Length: 456
Figure (cartoon, rainbow, N blue to C red):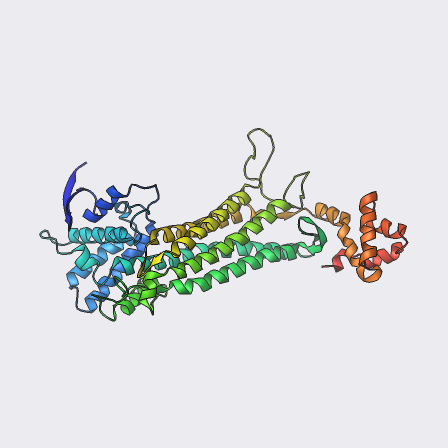
């Protein structure tokens, strides 16, 4: 491999000749050989958006000339278009402020921009020009918010809508089917299958609304606060103008944070948003568990629904098929819940003017968004969309349910109804026969009272 020499304030460093990064990126690459987790490209792209917006604003404020602005914008556009992905190699496990990834972007933008200018002395400096009016301390948390909003809106919300549409269809298709309800994993009074599905539908609707609400805090950007929130070395209007420009570039609304000291030192907005992801994960866990319980069998389980058979389920038991999509979705939900613990702990570590657990926070948030999005789409396409009721099994289970006795309470009272249920269970007879044997009701009276379709 051929190398070139790059310099920073600490001296000279050898950098691969075919890479646009500079000395500070190389130092980080050599000093933080930790894990395999790389800084997400969504964060890199968001930083490129910030650098592009900053160049436009600094130019309008008379701080950056047209030639430099044009070259910086072109370099940033290449990053945003993912044409330079191979130039961002840094680990998540680096400085907690994200400074090294911010400098990675600054160096790549500067070197790529300089390569677009006429040959000669490098005109564009990573700190003085690309990082103008910024600090890593306000640029990185701003990039976190931008990446979080864009990924949540572009990936997660459409995935929720897709699964929600499936449940709404199933709810309508299954109207009129009455089955036994269950609480505590025990038989309960009847419920319509459409009513059972409606709970899943409402969970997704509430989850989507919670996420939408949580995104509002992430639209607030720390830019303009620079190193500690005072805005040193930035024009007083830079934060507002940069947020407006970022909104133009992304097509998504962002605004400057009212209190930059809070914007640098606290990660509460991201934690709140991840809490909404955790709530969705908890509901998805419940939905997937319901579906695999209802589909359990095929002969020795509940067997009230069937789900698509996608692949063999066992390497030793021929013909076995398992609810694998439910398992994948619940594993993803577990990971999101674990991520929430990590984000919670990391968010609590804001010391004085800066939180220094930011790469951990954003890595986990973006992983949660990706896992929820991908697992919901997979679950929808390969499981939920193919759910079908087994009407015969549902009716059989309903007819055998002892909890139909609840309909007798108003007529014969709770204690006598309990006697009917216990006798029916002990003798293995129907509730109707038990009520008649106890001389509590005639057959006709029982039939008039116990009508499952009127109990839902």
